[in-house]
Image 1 (tube, rainbow, N blue to C red):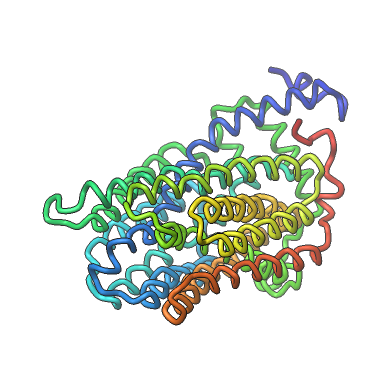
Image 2: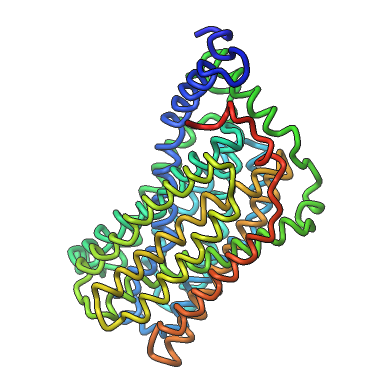
Length: 446
């Protein structure tokens, strides 16, 4: 493939077709591994929601103890997120993501030995510290390989790991809880942490051997293909901020995006941590049945997320896509509460909620990556993600406190719905980025 084949006059059909082929090649190389890594990441983060079905009774944890333990993960995550992402930008994604995955996999497996609330809090805190930098590191890593007009679709394919983790993780977790209980003298929840933690360690080794830090390191691309990507990334970054870390963190637009992300992620973790318990509360008893039913909302969520991201990429518009998705998520949560007398209609509400909540995420990340570049992107993405993920501490803890007080999750779900509406309103205050407005139509995905 020659340079002239890849880069005919700007806007030409041949140029777009050739570029499409290059980015498809990149996606087939990178996205499957990153997707698999995020599946195990998300399972290790939220499998405590399934473990709760047995763990809470076995260890005599109250709802508030469980909520605090589930959420304290995000305190460690918050503290170490920015430094972790800055280190990744300096030393490269391959070695740093491998380090992250190996340490968090070992800690996640070690959760099987928890026997007191304090031990639960400590290991969840260190699990968050170990995992800090993984998600924003991947979001940053994608900016090295995709220009803005292609990044939304790539990000949605990566983030599809969240609903796929629910689709696969629910039935698998339910089966482990039900079938492995008593094997080797361990309870089902202990096997759950072990069997979902160790694969992360193995994947960390694969990342070390397989991932390339930058486009220039990709021997599987031709010289012409590397040059095409480098040109598009350079053009994409021409209007982006390269400010100092502290200047980025003190930027008002970054704070506004952090608040928006806090609101959206509150809904995500409300669903992730409490979906098994909500399904159980409407009358489903068996762990495997709960796992199978919990896969339904995530299945629809992955389809909605991909279609929303594709629409946002084609229209080069992020704010209204995010806002509408947030309102849909809130409506679904309210419906699930209003219909809690019916398992079917409650599940329909949770499915709509999951579709809306999941659709906010890939579209949202088009906004900060549209105006931040280099070290500024490393710090800004990490700060927005870490602040937003504090909702992973606040939402489960508050729902736990509310459930202890009211014996129901209804008020907690209404709280999450209100946060989603607030996030939808705030995102409309974010000014469109120059990178999004000025992105070349010639580089837009077909």
